[in-house]
Length: 582
Image (cartoon, rainbow, N blue to C red; front, side, top):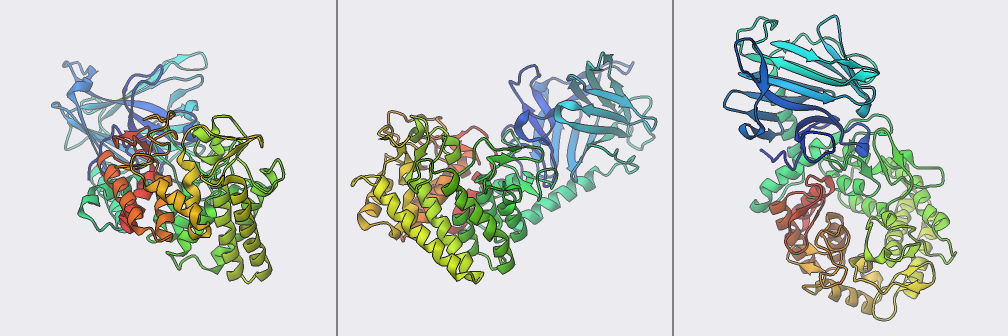
């Protein structure tokens, strides 16, 4: 398969290294860059700009080939940069190394020095680059051809670093192909990687990368419609390439949301990726599900997001983990009693945290302090600030209590199972009393007033409770979802009614279609017996994703992909919907 590197970065399973273009970044030239996603989304992670160069005279001087003269082709095997003068290939090999080979041309790597960035020559001919900006070190070694480096010192840093891999350099190593050059770039932090003796293995490296991806595809959820085949490959590539290694705060291999710029995992995004993996790769699925519980705070709180370096605790995300675990249990016998015991106590603590730390008025109904806690960051439900009580949060906690009842029963804790059952029943009653006004669900802000503004899909999410709801409540929610031209469009469910005064085509949670909402609603509708509507919504979403790519979210009216165009939870939801519902 091939993909557009303009939208989907090139990387591979288990690596922080990325090759992708950057445009419009302050103080940086547009172009193709070697990046690292180590440290998450605190920066763009750019290390070197990549340019093809060619000899312009017999004296050996090289100059860049214009951007308009090159073509870039990306595939799981690697990136090929072509021109009429020659071409180059780049391939990530393993966790920390990237190989480069040029034929007929050279490769220039350019780095603008930060406050302390520098490059130093080593006695074995390699160059060490200490890149403070990304908190990484890199070792650059020529395997064939010549390596010419300029790194002028200026005060506390090198003002710039330019490394040229030149096939016609007089210092090139003996070779049967004197017009070729090859180099390896290795990322490290403390211990220098050993000198690399092996050269000219580019074909083998690219073959290995392709084989690793094809093995992943073989364990990816199948699709039964021919129209989803290419989209399945794209979704498989995005999920495969976005896994980073266990390191730092990441206690397990972790699937980032993207290797564009959403280079973290958030504490509900990870659930959807775990769901898509549980049938084909149950251990990796379990790693995705449990990774946030590995860093759970003593009170029971989960951070908003984590990466290998940093955890953010200013916000959290909604408690969909009980719903997620129940869904996974229904599809995999691999989650045995030992794993249920591993999850039970952390899930209890996470659930109790909402009742103990997010019920400021003591009415038994937890609240969101900010839209970011809900995951629907700027939804119209949060137009008046917070704290906000919503029926959707109650629905998630009811489902979570029911899952805890199931786990307690399987773990032979009958008293605790009964307590969780009572908790679910009590919260269901409180939810209906507080939020159902006889015609619709509402939300409350600061315990003072109901929120009349906007028309958010958020207030329809309690349909996840299905027949647990009174018949009139359930039917009202269902009719609202079925009505074409309100939330339901030809591409799926808009997060704000397209007739609302607050609807925005690219309004984040004020209109666009989001993959997690689609899966929650489709699964809820299917579980309640509304298979036709569930299938219709799933098919519409899958058609849109197949046409527009695995974007962070989508224009509800046109289906165009918005924001980050290579998102893993979108890929995972597409795979689930295409495999099970569409």
